[in-house]
Length: 243
Image 1 (tube, rainbow, N blue to C red):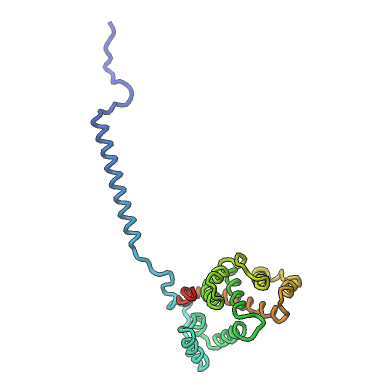
Image 2: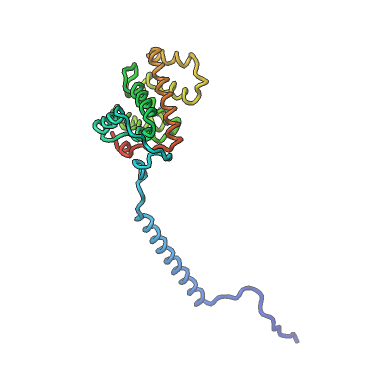
């Protein structure tokens, strides 16, 4: 006669229907709790206020602690003229105000290159400034001179294209040749050859114009590096101009 085994059967214990229903109910309850919790977090994130992207740009103009010098009578008059014509003093002038000699030299060079009579229009000179600054990724000059391109051209999209990629803009042959030369001079100055100057002549520029293109490009390569080295911040008003 076979002996009865006292060992427990192998394999997992089967759960009763009541236990299965209870587990399913608990799972649904947890999912609902987690969903409500996620909604609460999302709501908090969505309603949390953040500081404007330009917060502090008009007060902490550079990362350097340089005390301003008293302005010379000439520079004081120039700052006053900026207030009257623009409604503000550009931050780059405030940044240079720690040294009157440097400030005066910067203003003189800028005004000669960007405002004095030239075979290049003021818009063309500003386009060079932005294309060079885009190559160098200079925040200050892209913002300030991008606004100038928008204002002088009456075409906000042109200012954006200059800042993003001038090659995507529908430019004239003259403008494209001018910017190609300015950017090559910025990226590979050692590679500029007679053919590059000839391309400008074929586009209608004379030799004095070529000098001016090079001078504007050179000035903004210098300015871009000073601005990047000091974390110079543009006036916040530029962002909304000529939109």
